Structures are given as C-alpha cells and as structure tokens.
Length: 163
Image 1: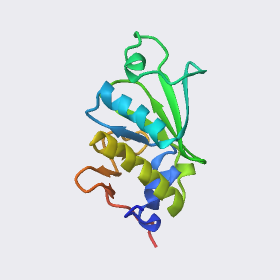
Image 2: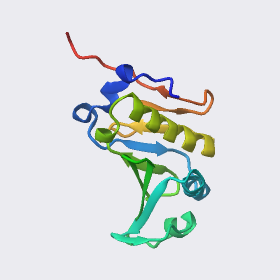
Image 3: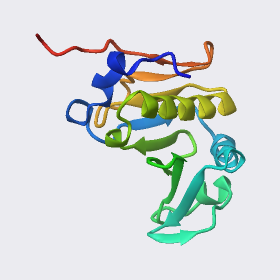
Image 4: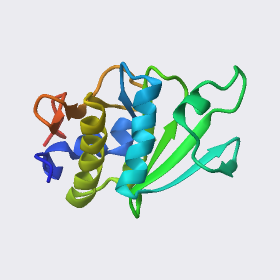
C-alpha cells in the first residue's frame, strides 16, 4: 500500500494541470536495466504487447531493440499492470528507461495504489529512482520511487486551489 493519499496528490494527476501524458523515467539506465524491466513484466505476469511501426511482434531482448540502426522504427512496449492502467515504454535510448501513463486512467486512491506499486516494482528491480515529470516539463519530477526509503514519495509541493 502506498504512503500517498489521493486527496494530497490529486493535483499531480489532474490532466488539465499536468498534461495527460506525464513522462516517467529511470535516469542513468543501461541496456541491462531495460532487460530487467522486460523480465519484470514477464515475472509479474503483466499483460503486454510489443510493436515496431505498428506491427505487433514477440517481445525481443532489450539489446536487440536498443541497437537498431538510426532511422529505424523505435520499439514500443505496452504494459497493463492492471486491467485499466496502461504504461507505454518507448525504447529511445539505453541511458534512460522511459514510459508514459495516461493520467485519466489514474484517478482515485485505488488507481494511485496501482501506479505506486508499479513504480515501486520497477525501482526495486533496478535499484534506481523512478521519477514522474509533468508533460512538457522534463527534469522537474513531482513524485517518484526513492530507493533509500523503498517508497513512492512526493518530490514537489502539491498545490491547492484557492478558496
């Protein structure tokens, strides 16, 4: 269970304030980290679908996807950690595991718990922080998995609407 409460963090999940598709990332990653994420998806039994250029394919090894020639289609892995929660991983560079989530799917405490559990699973597997930046505001995370505490924590002050 997450330490975060929906009422305290819902501003960070408001598509009007944050953009609908925030960037979630693991900085200072490697091809081995990408492979660990692929392995985690299988171990957890999360439903997934891999595609390149719209063509659905079996999930390849991370090294194969990340070593594609310049100009080739980037791989995309869709992962459903819960039936109505989708994370889309895009294999742009080995140095950063990155994915998007749709904030419209992450409304309420139950979905917050799913999302935090997903971030925690990735962070624990990699032993690295997992950070969520608002859409279009890269490098300014608002929450993330902290390796030292083993929890998803706030990294910015929530803002409250004026009374």
